[in-house]
Length: 190
Image 1: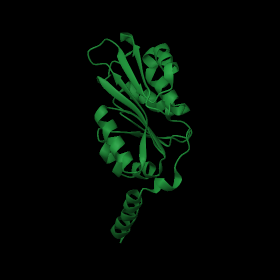
Image 2 (image 1 turned 30 degrees about the vertical axis):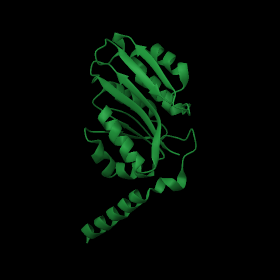
Image 3 (image 1 turned 180 degrees about the horizontal axis):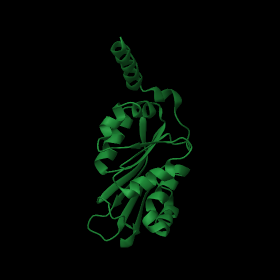
Image 4 (image 1 turned 120 degrees about the vertical axis):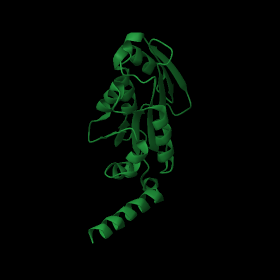
């Protein structure tokens, strides 16, 4: 009997997921972020999540399998009802998050590429970011760049067009466990 109840409730949740319940409650610009997905293996991603992890925001470590994160309870319920999801993950996990979110009616509101391959520091490329102020904050914060990016995402003062912005941090500003490339992102309902 318990198995039957579990299967029925799982099917109900899957049905809600498939119907895209977010369409009925699109988030206004500047809405609160309900979930942060981050790659817990990296200090920068943990710092990003810590800055955004206030006011009841769910912190969801990717645990090396972001697809499982989207389908397993309790994260499935959190993500199914979220109108704003932020993240700092590897590039492949960012691609998966975009695809999973698009199926639920969310789109990319912001994306930043943080690339340390072949250079001593980090090169940051931001799409739909808040102009030169973010570049200045990145440079001012040095090793705490992920916190500055998280603060930008939290403020929701993101550009509405397809503007791009570049910033660079010096070699000492990179965490020892930095994987080469990380992607920060914000997905939201329109």
